[in-house]
Image (cartoon, rainbow, N blue to C red; front, top):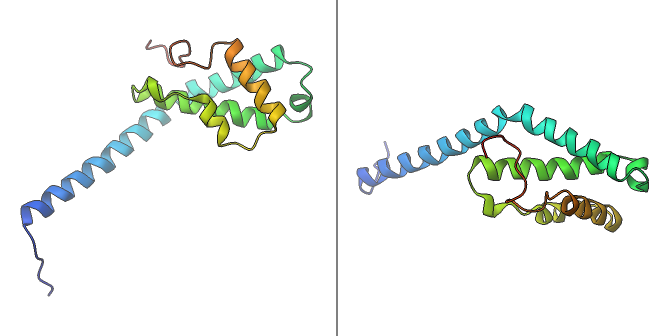
Length: 130
């Protein structure tokens, strides 16, 4: 049997910290999943709005999937910021950086975000709590 060294109170405190951290992660994921219907509806709304505002977009006419992925990433990012009460972390342009979009697609999406005031936390909310 291996003897443990160190203060048992510190070990217990570390266990409690790890459990609390895991619990918080699970709570946040559960909260986001509980709002799944709302943010999926928002993704579809934005996709339809984009199609209506940019009907001649060659990229969108050819394949709307990259646009759906980009708008979906932005909506889920915004939802997370809202649910965690961290509006200052909403940065849609950083989300676009993580995606492999052509420069033309990215420009269209950025213009769309600005045109519809979806580019700032102060002007874009997904959930009715605001």
